[in-house]
Amino acid sequence: KQEVTQIPAALSVPEGENLVLNCSFTDSAIYNLQWFRQDPGKGLTSLLLIQSSQREQTSGRLNASLDKSSGRSTLYIAASQPGDSATYLCAVRTSGTYKYIFGTGTRLKVLA
Amino acid sequence: SQTIHQWPATLVQPVGSPLSLECTVEGTSNPNLYWYRQAAGRGLQLLFYSVGIGQISSEVPQNLSASRPQDRQFILSSKKLLLSDSGFYLCAWSVQISYEQYFGPGTRLTVT
Image (cartoon, rainbow over all chains, first blue to last red; front, side, top):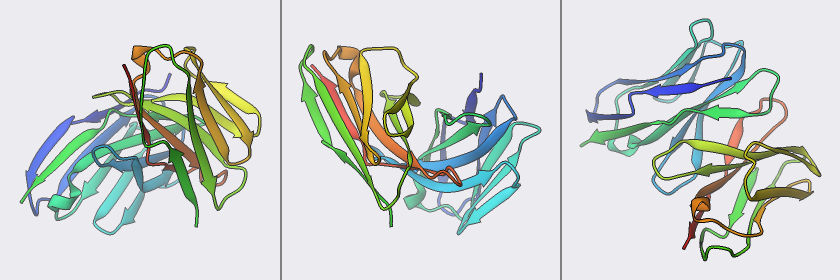
């Protein structure tokens, strides 16, 4: 059974810092991994999607990497801004299923 | 471009009353559709998913049910709500190529 863990649960950093969010999964037979952002009381916004054959994806100040063999993905945020404050979730789709398993998220606060 | 709608945005219902939440997707055809619930301080729990009209897979054997009467319409229902049904309900869709997921704005349900 696929399990997804995100560490840390919460993170507070000063503006301008580069930071890394972690996502671990127990079953390496995945189809893809997706990173989302959720603002309080809102739906999820897709940030990056990494297919199982890819090693990383980049969008602006965001870079996500995937290491299937070790069951890990990281989301790198460069030059953090107060507007980056939100909860970040990762989700894994295991091969052979249509289901996505979500981590419990990392709550990020960027201080001005 | 694709758009996903959910309504209502907020709902307060007494215990024992029925429930109907609706989700529609525009700008795509034959999407996979998903219902999730997010309880306070917890991760996303997959409730139902559908890969085609009339096809429903249930992940949570509780007093909720789902239906897909049209290709881009997904409905979540209950005949009698419980206090434990309170939460934030999110609808999502994915394309059948990349399987990237996109979320609606959510419905906040409070059962009193």
